Image 1 (cartoon, rainbow, N blue to C red):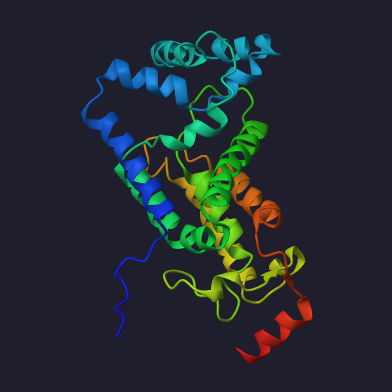
Image 2 (image 1 turned 90 degrees about the vertical axis):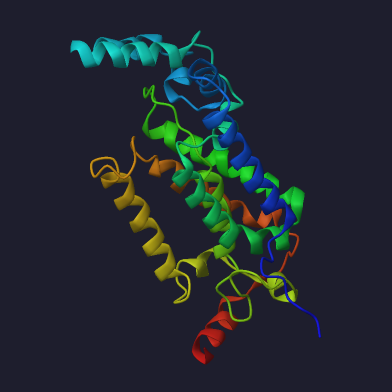
Amino acid sequence: MTREPIFNVPSVIVALILGLAALHGLREYWLDDSQDAQLLLSLAFVPGRFTYAFDPAGVADVFASFQGPLGRAQEETARFLLGDGQPLWWTTVSYALLHADWMHLGVNCLWLAAFGAPVARRFGTWRFLALMGLGSLGGAALHYATHRYDLMPVIGASASVSAAIGAAVRFVFQPGAPLGGIAGDSFHQPAQSLRHVFTSSRTLPFLLIWFAVNLVFGLISAPLGITDGPVAWEAHVGGFAAGLLLFPLLDPAISTLHPSSWDQHDEVA
């Protein structure tokens, strides 16, 4: 009799979680404040830094808006994060390596283990890593589109994890494709078409709940003291959209489940 492992998670997921935890542990227990600030400056995504390259006057207006003692402290921090004003292009991906605290890291790792595992098994290691990178880019792009002059740093793997969730939605809710641990052919079943993702009775409720939770959490988490700073929920949506829309480009299983056959499954279930 074969014994199933307690934790059946692809090695790439384990490696990502351990790597993110090690980096956060390094920041928390090894680097001093100055070293950690330099790491943040090098890896965090700061939208205003990119805007400064073509609209320095607009960024200057942001500095002019800082007033009073608190404003002077904010201005000092903003000037540090602006650095020399040159856009650091790698930060559109590298910001995913940093986290605000252990809770932030833990929540992302839990979602990564749950939704990333079936996608990693379906895609393989390198396609999955490409998905994570594209999710970071998608998150940075949408956040930038809505916060062009913001000098607050964006950090966290939430956009990348959201990309894994977006990709998983394309196949994990169909009959015989379990969400979670058991590897096998069930993870290589035909995926839903994009149109059917938004009409299926299996996926639509999840989409509505996911978007609602991200919106509400993004709006109320900081005022309620759940997090020290605002949640970049736009980055979550950008990452999710990247995973959902780019799924066919990375999926090694090229077949897509026809909507009519999915409807039949829905009726039987």
